[in-house]
Length: 273
Ligand code: SAM
Image 1 (cartoon, rainbow, N blue to C red):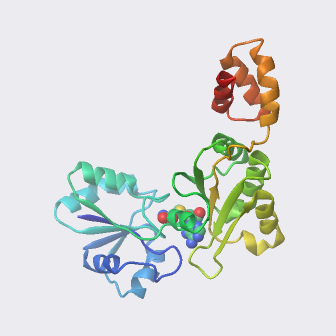
Image 2: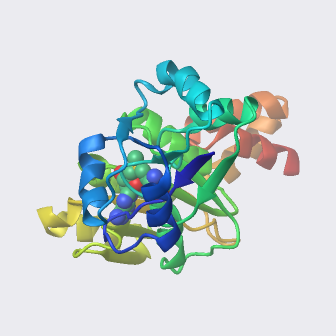
Image 3: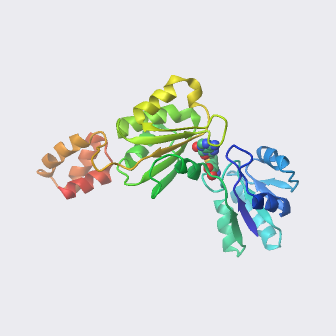
């Protein structure tokens, strides 16, 4: 049996009784960073042997691990924080273990993703999770443009190194009215969950260096029926002109270049006109 066990995202008390019992009873714990996990394991008096499994050795170790599982060894996979496989390693092992007929069972618990949306005040009925935003600005702006017309909540993880730059990029693409939530240091002493417009978020991050420290989840509310992203008024002006000279496909490509709006959205708009 391979157990996938969620561990705390900050507060060490956020772990289930079943998670602790299982971590004590398996033969081996596979941990992303063994030194980091030792803190949690010693807090709960867990002395099970620990092996490392991280993004750099997962592909190489998987075949041996599946062999051990098939020979009857019980294993538990944990990551540094939260739920394994959610922007964390484990996918290759789980895929291969299942292919080989090993039973894989989750022991659920915290994740920054579900914790953030549950306390954000942003619609939670339907959402897309994108993991980490690209670190380079060009790719990041492109990613933000691609979700700018999303009809459901969109969620990202972001590193403190880029949190201000990302907030500024969100503002430049989504404008000043979109409601977003920046959820920081969840379950820790400096937990802060701000649901506001982007100018307010940028002000908050800029007002003190400390405000940019820690771990963040960014939640973007769906586009409002009446709101427009930046460039949309321009799009509505130029599309009819372009369409009088050329087909929808070419017109939408040119309109996307001029306005910076996602090409697919421009095309949809062109055929709706
Ligand atoms: N597996 C984890 C989970 O289930 O949430 C996520 C791991 S991912 C490598 C780490 C990212 O998750 C951080 O950079 C941050 O964006 C987010 N994160 C983790 N802990 C957090 C916390 N306590 N508060 C806010 N965001 C957190």
